[in-house]
Length: 195
Image 1 (cartoon, rainbow, N blue to C red):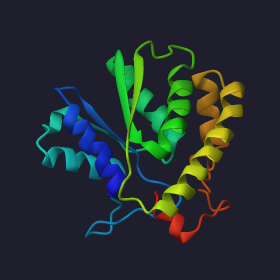
Image 2 (tube, rainbow, N blue to C red; image 1 turned 120 degrees about the vertical axis):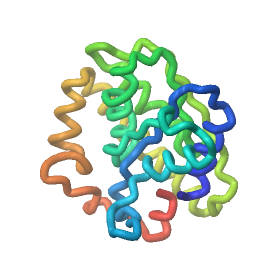
Image 3 (cartoon, rainbow, N blue to C red; image 1 turned 120 degrees about the horizontal axis):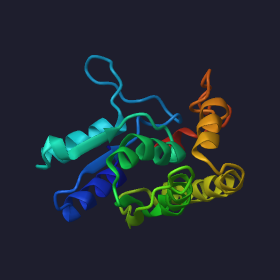
Image 4 (cartoon, one colour; image 1 turned 180 degrees about the vertical axis):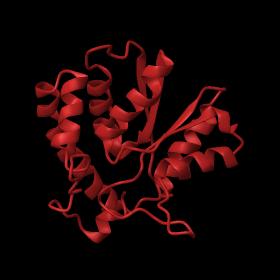
């Protein structure tokens, strides 16, 4: 795991008081997933769950979301797989400084969609990224702002969970059939290191 992902998990470990910890993401469409010794993909959420368990969190308190490939997917799948079925009233999303604004925009939008918007308080906390190369961090901040700006028109156009489901699985490049990933929006090799 990159250092900035470990810092998110370390912060969850610092403040955890018996609540469930949910690790998010299958990975990213910006690069192939790492493989285990048997050539099976290692989901980011599975690596995070293993990290938490090795740090002493009981496995029964660690839940994984292994479907999402981006921030909108993180919000959608966490809502429909864990938050809504369990009826959670408070959710804390821990992310990196560089990612906070987009995370807030995506989760606030997705968790607020009808029917049955999440009536709980959704809170956000960011951790610093001191080990990330400054040039890479600067590039990632620019990319995050662009992605946040691309999100804004969607939040106006898509106002229900049904609309979001339709859009995700028919138009979004990472989830639509057939999925094309983000191959038509290539990123540089160096930039892949920030994912």
